[in-house]
Amino acid sequence: GTVVTGSVTAGRVSVGDVVDVWPEGDKARVRHIQCHGRDAESACAGQRAALNLHGTDKGRLARGAELAAACKLLRHIYSCIRAGVDQ
Figure 1 (cartoon, rainbow, N blue to C red):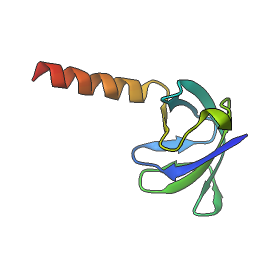
Figure 2 (figure 1 turned 45 degrees about the vertical axis):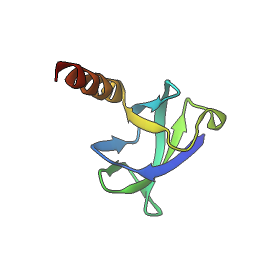
Figure 3 (figure 1 turned 30 degrees about the vertical axis):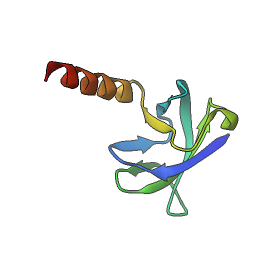
Figure 4 (figure 1 turned 120 degrees about the vertical axis):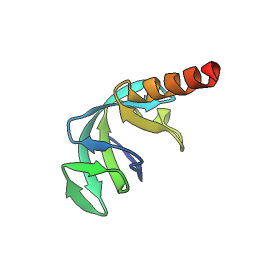
């Protein structure tokens, strides 16, 4: 599988979760998680994590890509755009 590393900035990610990969638009399932070099069932905001993903190819990912619970990042982007228009 593809392994990505980074900081969990909000919420929680768990083994078995399906995440959206942005901006690529792929969906991937979290197969395995490590936090601070130890196997974990989940990772939460503030932790550094390595996620083994099934469903996206390493060649499609670039530095700076974001993962989000299915559709949550899209809703956040929509909210930001809507808030900017309403003001």
